[in-house]
Length: 72
Image: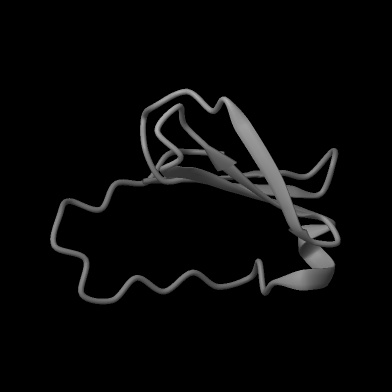
C-alpha cells in the first residue's frame, strides 16, 4: 500500500495494490475508487483532500508488514 499527496492539485491517492486500474467509479463527490480487470479495488483517489481528511496526522496501527517512509 502506498499513500501519496499531491499539494498542487490537493489530491490524496491511496494505492492498495500494484496492479493497473482499468475502471473507476466516483462514489461521492471527489472520491473515486479504481478497480483492476478482475474488479478488485486497487486505489482510492480523494480530490480536495485537505477539505475532506486530516492531512496533518497519519497513524498506522496493527500493520503486519514493514512500514517505510519516503522524503517529500
